Image 1 (tube, rainbow, N blue to C red):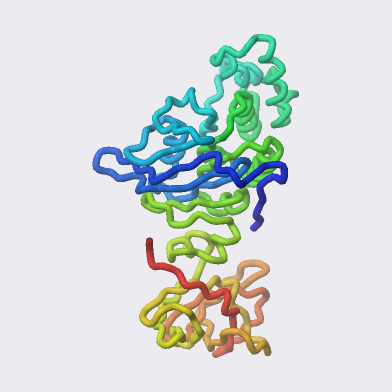
Image 2 (cartoon, helix red, strand yellow):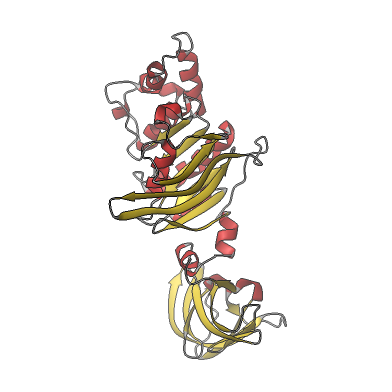
Length: 354
């Protein structure tokens, strides 16, 4: 899993886009519940969530295809929630790409400029620059039907970039690609975003895709924002039990805390959580066979099930009345009861729900 950073030549101190307490409903169905977030100049923000979480609706509100029922959307200091799409410095790349089949590549890219009545002398130069950005200059005269899925996606990006938007919105643009091409295009898209320095808001249901490409990830659930943070932070310090289980895999430890000590089966550790029931997240890969280190949280467990996963083995451990998953390199866990350990920093207290 890799993380990325905002380009060095882009100022991230100033918010380009601010969504403040935005709500949206369709009839009796509440789709968004007071969502607030910001997007910095040059930032790559992914909106992640399951089907029905409200991520595409949020994108459409930013684009101007829908109007919010409450809250405000501000771009570069200007209120835009009531502006039509053509008055916003925003362009959208859709999942279907929506290329005109009867036009060649350069004609597809030039279409938006002609609609905006850009001077005829400027159009060829702008089209050439946009095609160069996505490395599609040699396909300028080709029809969309002659292009691969990845090439069509690049043309759709060029058509959006040629209008020089301040913000580019992408609605699951990689979902139609096969797995290998999808991984390749993830890195290409992030590389392109760094080069052009434009803020991207990327909608996806694929957590690996969001973690690979983004500067920050905003996770939606039932129209509410569960957490927004860098990929590293949202993985290492999930705010809720839902985040812990949606981003990667996690053991949820439902413990009882008394005088700074949490107990759950054979597992016992210190915590700053208040007395009473509490939920903690512990990643399977954070569990190891016990060493001689004295600063680790140790517990005894018995292997109940073992699954081969290549370089690692996934073990289901019985740890005194509850089950834990442990992902351990190699096959060094003996049968019978063994002692395991994890770092105290890897046991993170989480909220049951927001």
